[in-house]
Length: 478
Ligand code: ADP
Image (cartoon, rainbow, N blue to C red; front, side, top):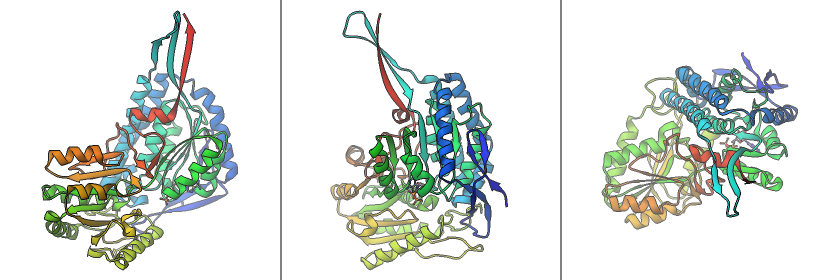
């Protein structure tokens, strides 16, 4: 079995222990053994990053551009291979895996361009004979903690801006998907970055992740993951005054109004709720449907769900791959059982299924007769499970859409300009989609949410610089 090491201070380093990376479509397929860092290795990475920051923070725009552009080009050139690894270790379909890989490459290329475009401001002072200059400077050592559901795109959208603006990076990927993280690190290791400017530290979040969030030498933490881990990171970083950015869960509504185009609405709901096995923080999990279209919509959803093929991620005919692991499958099942107990009706699926290989397969589930108060409509399931909430009109739909602690994405399907425009303005979410699935975003514009979904400034696009830089105002006597 091939072993994959951590990358610290420009060197590949084995660890005292290694963990297997298991294919959720076929648990007999072990992709490799991945190093599990201990606290000592994390300390080494932090020290190396701190030293490298002195050099990388002074690097020129062309050098930063060239490093990021080279990473982006290689990811794009190897999209089939990396996309296949992604689908194999995470369980999304091959097409989705390749699509995500392309997106990661595009993100690096976008920030390669940003390295050349980052400027400041010059203003006349209010005092005669004085000039004012406002520039952005890198922060220092940035700890990046990522989840398993986008094993290359989320690392890309944190690593690329961190390096673009001159920071040193320690990247702690999710335990379940170290494969793409390692490939990305290997690509980065061959660029002209100074040793220590980028470090890959694979290992348990509760050990190495926690140490990183507590270390005074780590200036900032960017995290994507669960609400509970995000909150504990917020506490640890608040105590020592570190900068932090958190992207956590969603409980995203998709509103379907009477005047919606039925095909558009069904396409949005199927894609948003079930693609990538529903394991997206922007997935539509609450489908809020007005009376006049409710029965037609549910019937059309049942018909479409029946056509979806659940199977191995690498099988080209698969529409929905497996759930990521046993723990997540059990969590999905618990939410389904609880919804049934609380009075929901299963209109489709919900059961575990067997395929030719041992894996974590389940039929996507659609509930009807649910109310906003039910547990399933308040907590994130993070699986191919969606509910229909029946409402009488647009006003009630909007109120239900906003009746959640979360605020990542919100969608509406309607042919009414009035309702679409009103929804864009009044949905309490960081991202709003009209006649589009709630999941699926561009790489050059801000990503993030409100309320309990997010904390700190936005990721992606030019807005990323808000987190990865600090502002300096200089005054000079002319
Ligand atoms: P999920 O339940 O989706 O795996 P988590 O929030 O547990 O979400 O994990 C997201 C990331 O946070 C992973 O890389 C994980 O290793 C890391 N992590 C888990 N616990 C901690 C912690 N206490 N401190 C820092 N990082 C952590």
